Image (cartoon, rainbow, N blue to C red; front, side, top):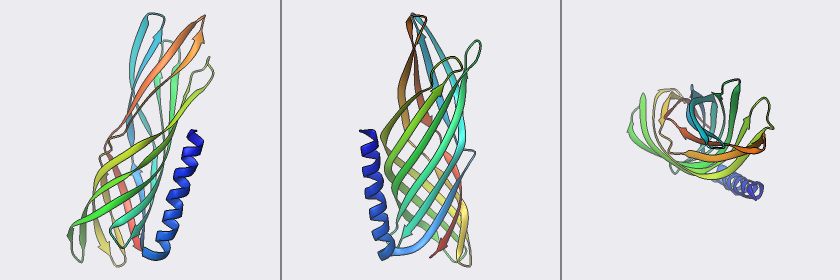
Length: 208
């Protein structure tokens, strides 16, 4: 079911993007995340014992943006974040992979020959997969589709046909799920919650 929803969303997104590209083509943009990280809270439950741990998931974040001439931008985002939570003898390793197609509305707050400031709001879908591994256990994974809503602000310098600057994003997304193993005849449950934190992007924008 998840694979079907994923394929449907991506098909609709890129079909719309292709049609828009031929009608409204104005600019392209590349956004690279700077030291992006998420907050992980995990609770391990075994028999009547609970243990709570916290960690940062660090990784890579890149966005490819097509800007239309009606202040709408069509975006595809790829990200990969990883972290670890310790036990007495080893570590649980958590990997989160995301593909996020979304639409962004860009509203100019200030614009002159040298400088631009924009307020932005984005909405779309997070297609994510979380993989959790431990040295003596089978690797487990969960996946899903979540709604994405994200305000941001962009400020940049103009240099001939290029705009070079920084963007600050304030994501609201949180992922919650759990995986289980059978250990010595009882269930060991790993519950996790992943919360995104404000992200800074290095941005270059150019006309087409």
